[in-house]
Length: 205
Image 1 (spheres, helix red, strand yellow):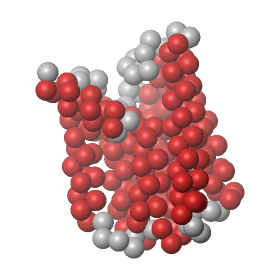
Image 2 (image 1 turned 180 degrees about the horizontal axis):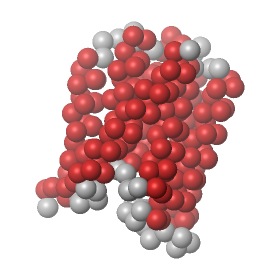
Image 3 (image 1 turned 90 degrees about the horizontal axis):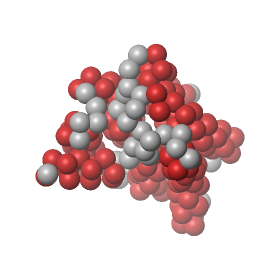
């Protein structure tokens, strides 16, 4: 019972669609001087939330309501195809919007890394096996902290350590719920981490 509660809590708090939003809040916290004024903080958070969480989540919920998928949890490998495509569309949209505006390269980097991760998971899901989207997000979360470390105006060592612990808890949560195998969990970590490392090349350029 405790394992299931633990699993559900971490699975909800670290829902994959929420991680770009967490990354945006992290950028605002560690590097507020790249924003013109406080109102721009809220506007940026709202825009990222709409494009990377609200719209994709609404689409997945609609797919479940129309019986295209059995549940918003999307446990079945084949059922993940349409949600991946939907999420990928919105993530590309978010990335292109921020890239064209040139407003904040750090947030643009997070959106690019998230987009790459979504499509890599999508391809692996089609060609080979199911991947844990939760640990993909967790691996990406650790990579984001590492990559943006030089750009932080505040000490983030505690944040980094907490992130690593939380990333480990996310994997344990998915295993506790028996939502994934060990291989799917570790593959997710790898995809997330590498996707953001690839995105970092564009960010640094």
